[in-house]
Image (tube, rainbow, N blue to C red):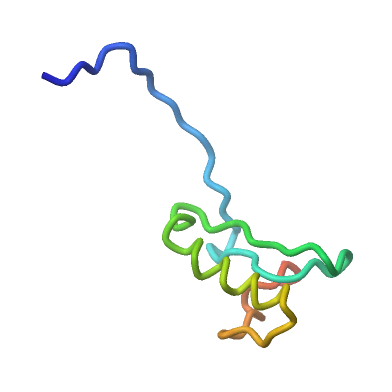
Length: 75
């Protein structure tokens, strides 16, 4: 059977924002830095889309969606 001995419980924090939306966008103070955090428990599933959006920003291309709802200055 499956040996489950030696394991232990662990709990960590999920990086979430108060409105449950991630922060995605260019830093207002450092134009070569980008924000992509706060996805909470959806980070794995939203990571690829966030990566594409940050890539578009870094390349100076228009983003495929409006990033206004995800700006850091919404707080």
